[in-house]
Length: 335
Image (cartoon, rainbow, N blue to C red; front, side, top):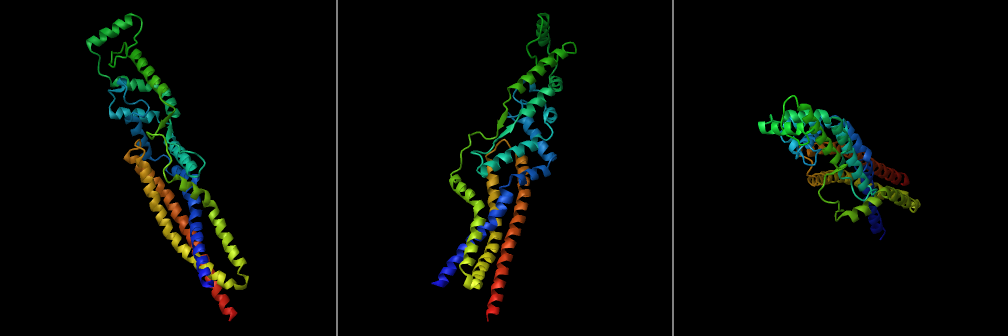
């Protein structure tokens, strides 16, 4: 009966110690907002990220009005990218990634009811307005020359006092400033009509089916190491007459848990990769290049988690070995 009780105690200690050795690096790395912000900061100014955002601005209907308006229909790809690069505020892509990461971590740490799934377009709107004149000149220069009929119409409007209709053609030097002004007004109007936030998901966020179970696990996660230490303390407290046996049971449990936690680190890394790929698939606004960039950021976080997991697993294994060595030395001294 005593052997069976010690076996159950060892299994319980093994389960708790292995969970403790995993819960600590999980909280220090995967569920730590600062780790993601540091990863983003380490890639600040990366040309791949800037090019990805420029492509999105220049070619997406959810961008800042660089497609869809007839005024802009004659812009070629190079002109669009040049304009997008001009209106892109310095550091804006990194700031939006930090915004998404902060929102996601707040959600995963049960501090928010939903993750952040939108981009803040206010800095873009301000930059469009600030560069509207330069943009208008690029737009007008892309238009074809006006036909005779279009020129007659413009001349008639000019005689009536003002040109109000956008001609979408170059009227010549005399009326060029007027047309540029109209194009500028249209661009500023587009900027004013832009929403403050651009949603990256088409549907309103809904918690996944496994979320209730996650909430329970996340709420218990910080307490697992303390529960484990408390149980170990109780084992030694109630085994004062047989400290050698308590050290032996705890040592084998810690040694096995340290080895098992190394395996669990690998499993969690693979699971995190799967979740990341699935999450990116739900965000169609990100192009393939953007997904690769985000995966590279997660690899930075992944390496830190693997290092932290290896350290804590090593500590657990070392503690188990020390306890087993102490129990053996105690057995020899008892003889």
